[in-house]
Amino acid sequence: MTHWKVERSPIEDGSKIVITSPKAGDKVSDSFELKYELTKGSQAAHAHVFVDNEYQKGFQGMVKGLSKGTHQITVTGATKDHALVAASQTITVDVQ
Image (cartoon, rainbow, N blue to C red; front, side, top):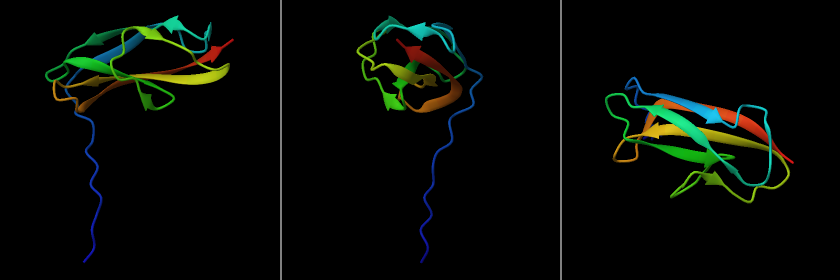
């Protein structure tokens, strides 16, 4: 018997995410404020922040203590039950 791994696709609910600060490619210090706008669709309730694909549980607006070099910041919409919606934006920043 074959078992298939089924991955849930993000929910397409009409939400939008825009990272407003920093901008893609910006040079930043090891700690910086991350600003984004979430336009909630039919299911999005809040956003999840990821740094280098690692979920930032309890994110309070500041990215702190990054090593020098390039880092990927992703903000993704999520439902009240924390299921991810399709709305997402990823930028890369350069920590000086």
